[in-house]
Length: 205
Ligand code: PRP
Image 1: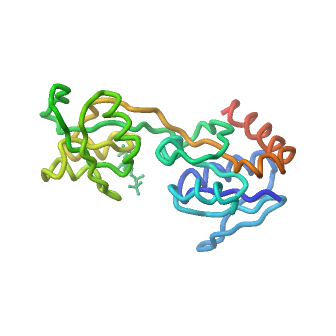
Image 2: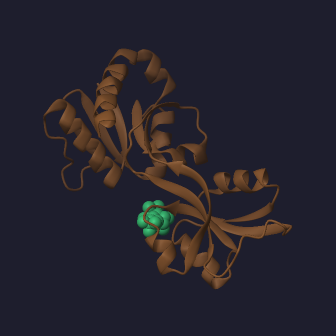
Image 3: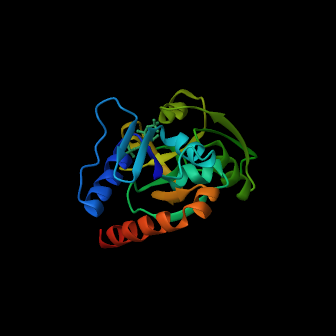
């Protein structure tokens, strides 16, 4: 039995679609249920940012989560496969009329992704004050809470509709299959069997 942590929303649905393609049976959560047991799998439906936590503590053997979340949390887990779904980028956003001025001594940047933000600006040798927010990041520059944001851009609609633009792309992201280290040792056969099937579907996609 493998326990799989999935992030609520589109990535969970697309991952379950892939499992349906592989195993030819229905993988669907009942309306409010957070656990689904089908075949040799038990799926857990968790918040996006919580997927690596379930995997790190071995409450799940494996999980599917965005590379952005993996990078941000930097946890000691095994990264196995790019699933090719949930594609987006992590970008620096600024007001349409602004330019990123790297000659400034410091910048105030709002983000959910504090570590990615700190690392990026320190690589650029720019002092940064990070304002940690939990959502609606695009609002921050509009009301003077920050000079810039670091956030996920998928279609670009949220930034555009709020008068922001992408100044720089920090990283491309997509959902990856991850595993707990002990699980990967103890259940290597099972995990690699699944990996091989997933890889076939993902490659064909
Ligand atoms: C993300 C991100 C942006 C938006 C970008 O939020 O924080 O606000 O999506 O998407 P777009 O480029 O297609 O407009 P999300 O909806 O994932 O919610 P969250 O803040 O709860 O992570």
